[in-house]
Image (cartoon, rainbow, N blue to C red; front, side):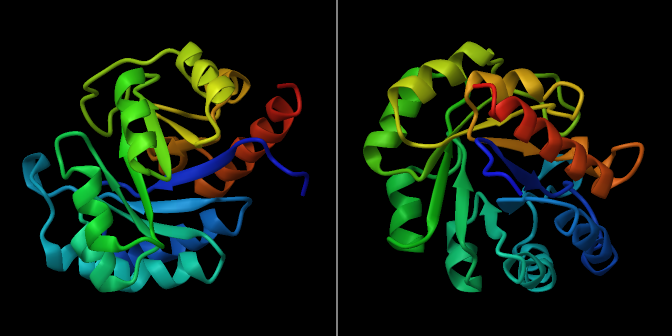
Length: 219
């Protein structure tokens, strides 16, 4: 497979039964290049998930990801990422400060930070030591109500000035991914664009990989 300028960052659906979802996940991961998988569960009415639900999903899904050299990240819970041996954690601006998350997971795990559409927040995160910054939302999304709306120019600005990887997130599908790859995204974070694809998750991963290769060679 050609070296890709941009890679796929999968995010789990907000609700699923882990054992039933395992086969779906395997099909997606085996369909093409996937850099990482973020476990992002939601409880009822958007409430934070129960710790035991995160533990159970991690115990079932993390081995599937790590066996395929796919990094496994847990959303919002650096304490559980450390406890369960995950590869890292993703934290939002309203969750835990980067420094606290880093202290909990240690120096060798990944810590990524949501920066919405803010250049200032991204530069702060980068200076603090984050492993990546996430910008969005780029498109409308059914997964969550976006706090901000970002433009592809933000990805271009970041990629031209900084070495730190940037992740594009928010409503991304195979139909609208190309401009974000061309703009300079290092990773595209995708949830329903894969799991709800009309031809199935494996077809979605293959389509996303094609776009990343085609558009990545042009940038």
